[in-house]
Image (tube, rainbow, N blue to C red):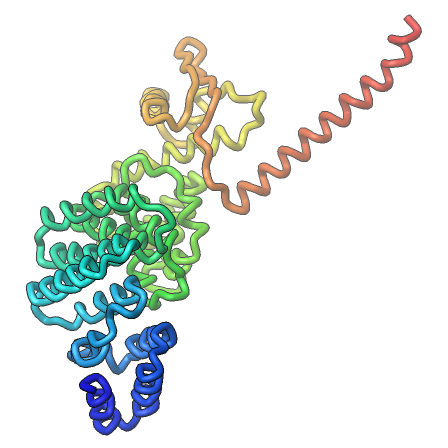
Length: 386
């Protein structure tokens, strides 16, 4: 058979991989398709196959012989890996479209998943070629398909959200990129990602969090292990800035800007949005002021906010109006008394220091409740006697 002849030729040509090809031949002859699939997954991940056209040859001379006998989503995974070895975008897309037609021809019930997975790779290829409209169309179709599916494999979700994030990145839509990239990470094991990939993604996510409109919660990103990839590198300053924003620490932010001024000036997006960044950390400083106060002390003098944000009273009022308009806080500004009464502040993912502060406040509350209980118990006999 052609497939076995190909394996034999590769066993002779590549003695160091002979055991792999012998194992493939054995599993193929015994028709153990599942075990063969698992073996192939390990094989295609080998470093030796990441360049050249070895995987293209493997697919056309071996995998294609039994491709409809294995799990179709696994076949989609193989097809996407193979497509990356084509040097011409059009050829890769043509190959992937042929694979999709093979999926449809099987008539299997769960064919939508592998088709969507492969389509996302086609969308990625269009995006790499600068064809944003074609990519957007496939993303819209993909979202519609995903919304109509249940029990979807995580790899399919991850492929959709990854391409979506890269589409928004190409358009410098920071907030949309941030949301899509976090969704990608929700369906992806961080351990499966290479260190360079994690560093690049952590850097992009951090910039997007700082620059994205209406992103005022940094706790979720700081709690994710991928952001630790910044530490010990030339861009670890970005991690420190995220921490400063998360706690609304304006003084710390200004210190970091001075300490890492050279690195900051190398990021045009940060330089262009310097005013926007200052407004954002002032809003986060305001939220931290509110959060740190007991619930019975939510009427805050504007002068207190002005002192901590280093703004004038007029600018504090503008800051409060901005915070109210984007629903970060709810309350009423009293310009006559020069105060603001806050009735609600947007919930946030808390860091360890903030959780510690919250615990201390709960301990104080419990102590007050206990003191009140003792006072009531002490007065009870007198009440009964009267």
